Image 1 (cartoon, rainbow over the protein chains, first blue to last red):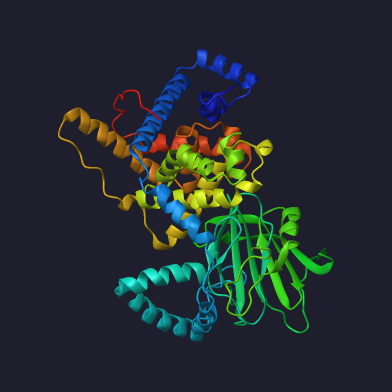
Image 2 (cartoon, each protein chain N blue to C red):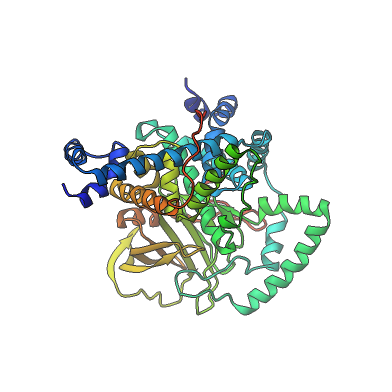
Length: 298
Length: 183
């Protein structure tokens, strides 16, 4: 082995993560190379230094003694039924909250009217909420309970479209985290709903809009989702996320229709996983005046 | 019956015991990843809310509970990083640690601060693997499973992280010899 090859394996060697044959070759090289021995010693000292720092810093960090009681309160809050009058007027009052075009059509293009109305309403509402403590407490509880829909595995958000019944995946990859529910008003300014899930460095993002009458599909590989015609576009490149921080080169977009809803699913998951998610879509259950809830939820 | 099975069966006392058994681990991992006590508290809540919701789907045959817990914790922290970027809160903006008068303590604190700053300058991907390897002491295979990335990627990230840290810390003082540290 040459110095460069050894150097590339030194960290793994220290971590005991090289193969037995690599270990033999590295040891043989080290026995006769002072430079690599020095490198090894420096990396080993650095590992100890970093480990010590992390252990010391972690040992100083202690969660709040109230952590369990806070969790208990939140668990109890989740189980509590909610009042039945708020969501309808809230949706009418601020229909555009959270709708941001992020992925499907390019730049952020919140519809101006929606944006201005929403901002005005929010400024007034937040002023009242911020300066009147009793209102603040009640508002927090009501907003948490009402103006939101819970995503599988964690996330939640607000603002439901009124032009169509949103669809919601009943399957997402295990341990993914729902990061938000918003919208993706596109260049046609169509009302829409966006859902995002993250799984480590993989993601799945839905954009749902009301289907046009002719239900066109883009060019791409023709497949089916639950027996319905769909198109899969592959080899997409870009970045995804609030901070545009997941760079993908193997992005895929699946487009299809479920009743009167056009669904686009952008993801860097495998096609099999995307299809599994796509085929699990079911309408959000929400009666007039009731909190929208995932399909099948009590 | 163990705590997980009892919690899955709806035993509230078992879930409380499960929380108390793992709260330090989750909190400290989040604290190291986010470098913020308040956010670590929030992540602790979010992680155990998710654990409570999803525990029924957890299958011990598919992997250890701690691996699942690490994955949920790391995912919540990475999500926070993503959202935080919009607000551009850099770790560099955190005020440096106050230095003590005693020279040896000063050395030690200066060294800790140097390592903290160097870690904070790593990308979140590199910082995450360093924390999983050197705080949680996970193997490369366990890190790969936690982050859902190939083991080769783990290997290259850890290598790059260590070599980047070595460059960053070249000019800073060497480590103050620390006594045994309780984990």
